[in-house]
Structure formats: structure tokens, C-alpha cells
Length: 263
Image (cartoon, rainbow, N blue to C red):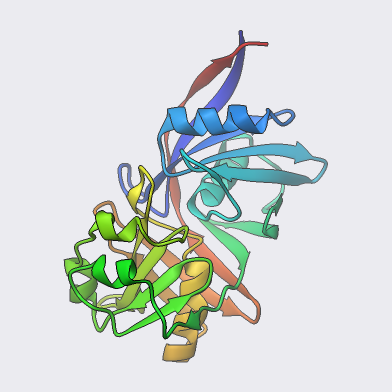
């Protein structure tokens, strides 16, 4: 049996048991995809990140318990935390190569700033029935990028939403974002994952690749504070940069250990 290191990091928070937990697995070389998928299933967190250093950059991949995905925010932030704070990289900037292209993360004090591609959503006039029946309150409008985005009038309405996964599981999409203007922030959101053990994701960095350009257009602001108002909750400092966005947050180490695979 061979031992591999693993870390669990709470992302988008500076307190334990807040934000969104992610597993981070450094590798010397890539494991088989099926093995990484099994590890993600065993971890049973919304995402497990694997990375391999190649010279001055890092290749990164993300797995939910069910599938590999093309972009994930909180496990990228968690991975940056491990590289900066545990592996003690000498630089203050990390370049990740991923299925969504190049991702840059900079360390600024205790905060990590991720540079992601922007995903401006398109307004949808024809909406799946299961999407509209999937919540107890009808949205003002529905938009689509990688994920569906449902807009509501205020934070209290987003907080009061109750998902019906019998309906949401009929919708073909990776995720469903619900969002509104915030009380103590520029906007708030929640994120739901149909056909998954995840259910509601606590804090979803990749969703803000869609939320930032949407609220930039609505609010006319380049810099915004976002809050994901799940039970665990999280804060994200956001900025619109042409066809890119930056998403910043804190992270804290919860656990480190080893897992074992047959050689």
C-alpha cells in the first residue's frame, strides 16, 4: 500500500465549520481518472481537488462524488491555501492549468484572489417546468450560462426558498443559482445541485463566474461583496475585469492525513 497526503480545508471563511469544505490531494503524477472519482466518492464532499506540479505551474482537476467538472471555485481556493500555507511555495502567485483554461490565484495577506473566466448568462424565455415547480416562490427572471440563474427581489425571499428536488432532478443542468440584492452585501445567492448527493452547496466559487457579470450589469459596479447564505455561509469579494472575474476569500485548515492505495 502507498500513502498519499490529503487535506480538508474550509474555503470562503476564516472560521472552522463555516464556508465550504473541500478535500485537496497533492500528487506527484496523475492517478487513473476512475481512482480519483472513487476517492471523491469516498470523501463525500461537494468537491475533491487533485493537483500535479509541472515546473512553475500546477495542473488541477475537480471531482464531485459523481462526476468530474470543468470549473470549481472553493476547491481551487482550498488548493491554493495548501500550496501557499502548507507546501510553502516561494511565490505569491499560482498558475493553474485546467479544463477551463488558465486560472490565476494570488495571495494577499490572509486572502486568496482567484482569476476566472467570466460566464455572462443569457435570459431564457422558455424554462423547464421542473425548474419553476422546483421552488416554493416563482423567480422574477431566469437566466442560463453553465448553470441556471433565478433572480428574486430581495435577500429574504432567497432565504425563504425551499427546493423540491423531485422537480429539480428533472432539469438537465449542473447547478441552479438563486440570487437577489443583499442587505449587508451587493448580492446574495444559494446554489443547488440536482441529481446529486450535494443537494445545496454551502459556498460556490464557480457560480460567481456567472453572478459577477450579471450583477455588474445590473448594479453598474465593478467591485462587489457577495454572500452565499447557506447554513454554513461564506463571503466572496468580487471584481469584474472585462472577460474575466476575480473572486477572493479566506480559508482555514480543518484536517490533514493520508489515504492508502495499492501500488
